[in-house]
Amino acid sequence: MKVQWKTDPELSALHAAAVVAAGEAVVDAKIEAALGGPVAAINERLEMSETQVAEFWRHLLSARDGDDAGRTETALLAAGCPELVMDSVATAVVGRLADARLALGEQFPKLADQLPLRARPLRELWEAHGPGVLRELGRRTSEKIIPPRTTIHLVQPVRGGDGGLLGTTARSGARLTSGASGASGAGGNAAVWIEAMLTHPDPAIPETLRLAWLIARAGLARTASSPGGASKEGGVSQEGAGQKEGAGSKEGAGSKEGTGSKDGAGNRWVEPQRLPRAAALALLPITLAAGESLGLCDASDARIAAAAELWHVARQPESASLLRWWAQMRQGELPLPVAIKALDKMLG
Image (cartoon, rainbow, N blue to C red):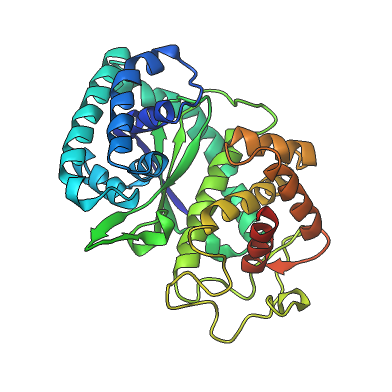
C-alpha cells in the first residue's frame, strides 16, 4: 500500500471547530476561547433552521475536498436543512467559519510551519511498523480491506489524540451521494485524518495502531460499497486463517454472486447507515491483536476497552458488548461481513 502524507492547516480549523461545537474537552484552552463565539453562532443558526447540528459537523469534517462553501452545502443537505432556507443558512455558516479560521490563525500563526515538524515522529513510527500492522490486519480479515493508496491528512492536535475518515460527497438533486460511506474516492484511493501527536497519549497503545485502524476502516468502507466487495474468503480469525465455507453458518456460506446488492452496500453487510460504527468497533480488537503479534501492544480485554475510549469510539456499555463479541470471535472464524453483523446485533 502506498501512503501520501499531507499536513492540513485547513482541515485543522474544521476539526477544532467541530470539537468545540460538540462540547468536547480540548487540550488547549486557547482553542476553545478563540472558537467559542463563531461556533456558538453556527450552532444557533443550525438549530433555528431545524438542521441536525451533530450531523452537520460530522459531514463538514468528513468531506474530502472543497472549499468552505462546498463543504457547507453538502453538510447542510446531509443534516436535513430545509431547502427554502438553505442558501441563507449556508451564507451565515460560511461567514462564521471564516471568523473561526481567523481566530484560530491568531492563536497559531505558525501552524503551517509547525505541522510538518509535529508530523515527523508519527511518520517515522509508521514507516517502521505501519506496513506490518496492515499486512497482519489483512491476514486476519481480508486483504481486500487494505486500500492500495491512502492519503493521511495530519491536523493540529485538539483532543490529545483523534482521527477520522475522509470521503467524497456530492449533491445530486435532492440526494446526498457518498463514496464508500464517506471514506474513499475515485480509483480506490482512501483518505483519513489524524492529529499529529508528538508522543503517544497512552504509551501502551501506539498511535501507529490508531492510524492502521483508520486506514482499515476506510478500506472496509470502500470494499463494502463495491459490488461483490465482501469476499467469501475474508474472515475474522484469531490466527488470521480465512475460510471459504463461512464457518458453517447459513449466513456465512454466502452465495455465488458474492455480496453485491442494488444499493451497493452488499447483502451480507449491516445497513449502510450502521456499518461505519459497527466496523469501527469490530476492527478495534483485530487491530490490537495485529499489534500484539508484532510486539507493539497487548490485546487484553483491559487494553481493548482502553483503546475504545482513547480512540473515541465506545464507552460502557458498548465496550462490554464489544468484549463479549471478541470473546466469541476468538472461539472460531466467521466471514468478516457476518462477524460485523453479529456485533451490530449485540449493540442493538
